[in-house]
View 1 (cartoon, one colour):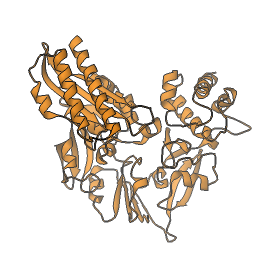
View 2 (tube, rainbow over the protein chains, first blue to last red):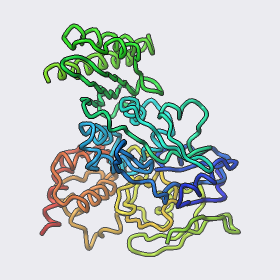
View 3 (tube, chains in turn orange, brown):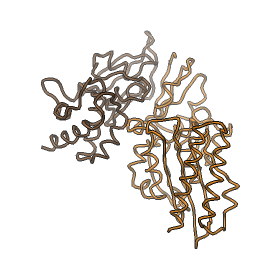
Length: 277
Length: 166
């Protein structure tokens, strides 16, 4: 690569004005970009000095600045208390301390990859994302990042992740499991959420990560069980349907069938725990 | 001081300045140079190149108080930053308590991963002077060792923690 110019913008506005230049690349935490920079890159735009590394709460949302690192999230009091500490727990399960020190949530969302943690968390917690474009910023659903219109680091910048606080009655569950700790091939991440009121399911989200680029969810299943009383039979049904769904993603893959059985067992574990509550 | 932009000079290099092991430096770098390549080029060869993909931790240095993988970050990212390598914390004649502890605990065999382990330990103990064994494992989980195993290092960090407190 022949980098000719390097920018360290210190306002979002400035950073956005630099995006989209020919042969430019945006570098957030640097765990991904630098080793994957296209050969023709001439301009590097570094997010290092942007004021987007905060974690705060307002009346509606828990807000993670996109420059927040996994280490910050793991150790932050809001992240370790809200949503049953789900975000801290998940951040702590990410890769290694060295990666957690560098990797940012914005980068994790921007480079869609089956192994990234934040898509599965966003999917489970109905997250929104604030993006800045030339001249304005807007809030979109996290999923819209992958529909082709918004290209983080190219025509927009992810500046915040917004987790709605209206899930207070929910119970949360996060697990990252693999056959062996360092295996990239066999692991699965699950992020589950359920609102059970008077033994009846009011809301359910079973999000399974690391099985494909976007997390797997079965919206029909989640809709079907609303209003139903939680019991052993229902749990068995839900878990089996989740297993079948994951299995259908890669029918002849041994690793995928292992993941599918994990999805079944972990969802059973989660839902059984709720029944006991 | 951090600059807002860097441009190529007439030799096709960038000028950056940063603090390396408490010494202010101005150096010329190329745009594709990693921090690891830069510090080794400057003669600080205690920092090791292992996987070169951010997986093994041999290249760990401390950048602005955080243990950082020098093999995957561009050198230009440390412009205006403070970097510490293994040479910056102790020497053969005047070892740091962490270095002494690694020797005492027998946490060194081939030694290739040890500079990285020590830098991760330094960052951990600077932030948390009395880590539990679980916290030590968590903080060192990015530093791979293929000959000593992972028990002696935990012992070493505990010894170091006590030495530093004295």
